[in-house]
Length: 192
Figure (spheres, rainbow, N blue to C red):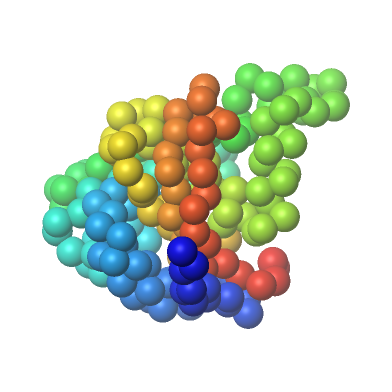
């Protein structure tokens, strides 16, 4: 069997791609019967847009930037978290599956690399959104926030908004080699 589908390639990264991406993602999720949508979001805006696009019958999991980046002002505030939760969006803030962990501290201090860095840097060849999309699926799986018996959709971006969308057979971080990227629905062609 051969499957022919359209992939969106955005000329630039950025939030101007979000609405087009969400429209295409919703159509594909409906075709595949996907009920779990994992969305990278800094302060909740992309998660809200995703919920508005997909409607109330899907499980929207908003994965935010960990508290380890507080010095940069990136973590979600308590009021932003509450606003998402009040809408029925599940919010996950935890250690990043592909960096920002104890291994990163050793690399920062002593140099060198470790296997997670190789995975992260390989995914970056497809764009920041691809690395984040894979990472948030691993994180949501490990937190028990998505089903593990079917496909899920991951939506991420470069900076603000969304420019990358994949369909994934999820896996836990400790079972990383079971993860499968089954479809690339959208990604930027060039990385700013």
